[in-house]
Length: 187
Ligand code: GLN
Image (cartoon, rainbow, N blue to C red; front, side, top):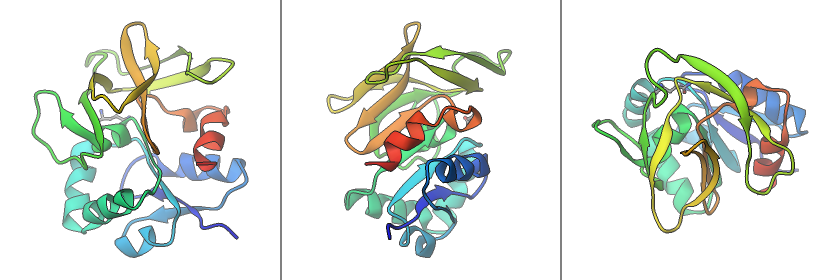
């Protein structure tokens, strides 16, 4: 029996990820404490509000626990806010991040007036495009040498990978397409 797939459940749209994990035949588990984290073999960081979740990660020691798990090789995938939390740097802002991907992100990069939109996104290694659901979405504005760009939307970077760490600006859990969850759950 494999360990469950963790979904950070401090705030945000974690329930949709749990459903998506179940759809690909794995057991999902809500992660709120370092003890929860110790039981899972990978972690999805969902969309939400990065300032709020950053504060809570610091307060309950979960941020440190995620850093330790990452150092031991735990696969991590951040969608939207999750990608912001994984970033080393946030453009023009000071707020807590885990600093686990060598990227800089711009929050709400499509402008305050563009709350959300959907469009096709071509992802490296995937035959057919995915539907990208962007909700006050961040983009990646700098990538370090170890970071692979997996997708661009126009000229903006919207999916990146660094080893077993994945970041997407958009929300695959809000579509019916389970290819990204399937892929990540195999790492
Ligand atoms: N705009 C949010 C933030 O900066 C992220 C939006 C999302 O996760 N849907 O925290």
